[in-house]
Amino acid sequence: MVSSDHLLTVEDVNTNLGYLRMKRLIDIFGSIIGLILLSPIFLIVAILIKVEDPKGPVFFKQVRVGKDETEFHMYKFRSMVSNAEEQLKELLTLNEVSGAMFKMKNDPRITKIGKFIRRTSIDELPQLWNVLIGNMSLVGPRPPLIREVNEYSNFDKQRLLVTPGCTGLWQVSGRSNLNFYQMVKLDIEYISNRTIWNDIKIIIKTILMLINSKDAY
Image (tube, rainbow, N blue to C red; front, side):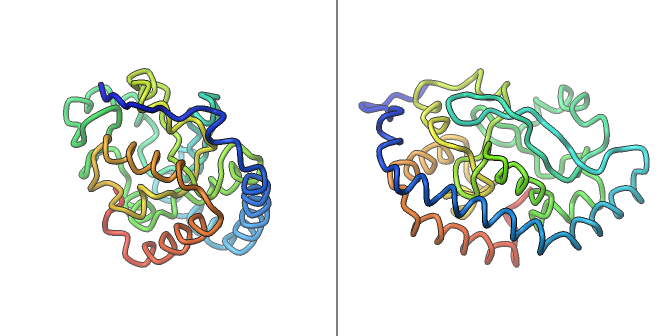
């Protein structure tokens, strides 16, 4: 359990209404433009996923925890075998990161096309739909799983005070090379210093990282 002298509150993160409104406008226009421009990639990836595994779905829908611990369905391109959730129970003891998060570099559940779209973060593109409908933002803490939140301390839950994002300070600061506590600290740092300019810098860094996504798995 990690303690803190001061925990962020809802009031702390909802005071700048101008920022929140502008952030939402950027999310709407950014997600619409992204969905339109990236539609050819969506089609190609969908075909490749179905060719490798015709019986499985193209998209993977998973319940995640968002702002104020509200649950929602997050979308991704499917990068794992169809029964990945069932196999997870057998792999939990092989977790390579500490804290309430599961990461495994050579996860046997990942498909061939899945390795590529994960390495390039293409598997995350369907989350533009989540951004458009408002349960995610372009920038913010990554939305955790319910089982992960069940292990959260009050300190960890600070990252649930804002709308989760497709990318964030954690992703551009090391991603899978960082442990759970480092991720939480970076999320809280982001939340405490949110500005449109900081969001833009994170988006630019994310785009540059897509060219060399060595830290994604």
